[in-house]
Amino acid sequence: MLEKLSLLPIGNFIRNKSIQNFLFLAIIQSSNVLISIISMPLLIQNIGVDQFGLVNLALAVIILLNILVGFGYNLSAPREVAVNQNDKTALSHLVSNVFSAKILLAAIATLIIFVSVFGLNLFKEYQMILVFSVLMLFSEATLPLWFFQGMEKMKLISIANIFSKLLFLMGIVFFIHSPGQSKWVNFMMGFFGLGINLLLLFYIHTFMGIRVYRPEVSAIWKSLKDNILLFFSNLASHISINGGLIILSFFSVAETLGMYSLAERVVMVLRMFPAMIIQAIYPNAAKLYKKDEKAFFRFLRNVYIRVVLFGVFIAAMTYLTAPWTIRILAREELKESVTYLQVLTLVPLLACLNIANVIMMLVADLKNLLFKASWMMCLYMLTVAPILTSFWGGIGVCVAIISTEVAVFLICLVLLYRNNRKLFYGFYT
Image (cartoon, rainbow, N blue to C red; front, side, top):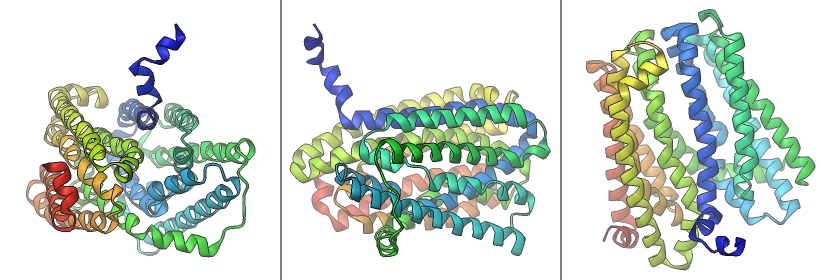
């Protein structure tokens, strides 16, 4: 009986590496979403909408600097780990060098914040919130997600992520009770994340036999040079997608920032879906592209059609449930947040449209095209968003973000057509 069950398609479906990667990534992101949904009403009730907006503004700055800390290793390091899965010595050197580089980058990012706050007196409304948030930079630096992705052992880190977020939620319940305590919100997220990451590193060293070597300056420098285009691509993409809150801060008061950040957080959670799809199918797509291009295009079309249809479903459901969603999260009627959320519902769907273009650029190692597309998208966002925001406030930011998703899809199409027509016609004809 068990042998027959093992022959069922569902068994092969679950054993598929792309499906497993997606499922564990989905578990990680789902836990993040669930904790975010639970924590938002608690924070708004305890610290107020205006302080909630400032906490999110500080978080936006930290996440931007985390792009510097990550420096493209989230894409390059898993591939290196996968290639050297059975070579403990090579893995040990790789792990030592990557973590050393990321901790150094976290220290540089921290210095940037300290100079900005104490030297240049920037971020006046939320300086202490931002200073107390720097622990999140070191939490990002010590996160071994890339290692477990390469080793194809995502179960442990998904459990660790859930535990970290539960500790953060408990911290909010027990310690955050007034607006004056808002500076501890991001601090606790970084503190618990860093603590769990250190336990994971101990596990990697003790139970997986990965040794700690002295950092190799030449190897670190080479990896930084190799990742420079990935870093700038990630930076430009992040500014384009998540820069709306920072731009809005120059034109609006803290209460409006809180209203907008509530809607934006919901939408950005949903926008993780296409990013998760790319991470999940990228390894299998790369193998198919090298072995059989026709099979690669068939695989990509099948995934693309299903993802876009699901994107339509996500957009429709988000629009219809927007009033209920905001009411649940804020525990009050916030019509302005509802309007922002309903306008932004197109963002996840439009992001799904560009999945095929991004996958084709990745598997064909067209880093230069990805770099150009990312920065053209960023320049478009930084040009259009301030203009629209100055006229229409939060609605202007929403329209700018939507138009940016359309712009990057068209930019990628044109770049692929001009630089690799074989890929373009292979998928689109």
